View 1 (spheres, one colour):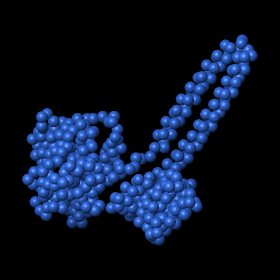
View 2 (view 1 turned 135 degrees about the vertical axis):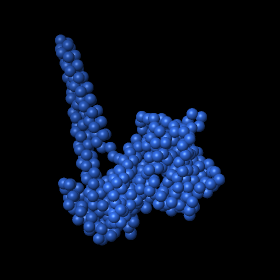
View 3 (view 1 turned 60 degrees about the vertical axis):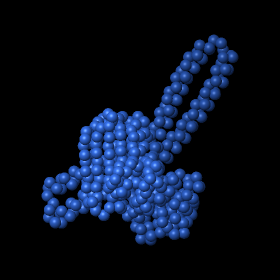
Length: 420
């Protein structure tokens, strides 16, 4: 990685971490500034105007979020990277609202740090190039206006003086019109290129959504990886087992990659729908959570009355099923010590597909039933839930796929019904 002409401010209260990261940054940036808390960081920012600010959140005197708030109040659009832990969801959302550009999760991976630095360096360089192109475009427009004004003066003068030159003037104007149209076309093309080059990844709530969707696949990958290590240490690792675990990990990783694409295009009304099998999606989704459910001793009963073809978005349908399974698992783990069961029924109702998911965790109280699908409403305590999962489910099923989702209770627990 080449050394960039950048000035970076790193704000961290841990001396060892601050100096360690400084050594890494100095190999890739022209200038590295250090601060031990948000107050020092804010003063250094005012004095030095760095290109990039990398800051921890939890610090004495002034925390990272307050420092970012003060920097943004100055009207600055400096690139900001927040260093935090997976568990600090509230801080993530606050940082997003303050307009941060990226996140680094503790413990910091040098590879991730350098990747983020490289991406931001490219964005900064691109923005500088865009500004230069804008200035060049404005100069060209001013010159064109000046030339046009001078031309009009000449036209008026020659029209008044020489009637015989009228035909020549018409020809000249036609030539000028062609040049103007060509210039306008070139300017529009430059504008389009600048828009494409300067776009940045959508932040905001989508980060919370992706984090919610990735939590279970990441856990699955972790369990599969640990099972390989366990089998290896006990001399039980066969070629077939290794190949099976690797294949499952690759399937989960592919699903995670597809999740990124799905959320990137989440609000795009022009996405093409496809026909897919409900049973196929159910089986694929169950394969993702198999290890986790086995760990928690959860039995899954799949009942197929009739498989159905659905016209819609297959991956988003899988995400809905994943959300419901995760919620059922969490309810069972918190309510039941043993005899944990989830049942899934695939059937057809009045010509439409019907997917039902139930559990024996005791059901949902009437007081909260009508709030379950509201954004940010959660029955989980502390940092266990974001309140986004069921809201996403309802949005996908009803808005994106013109279906219907509802929840009820049976004698054992909650039952979610999806009809499309």
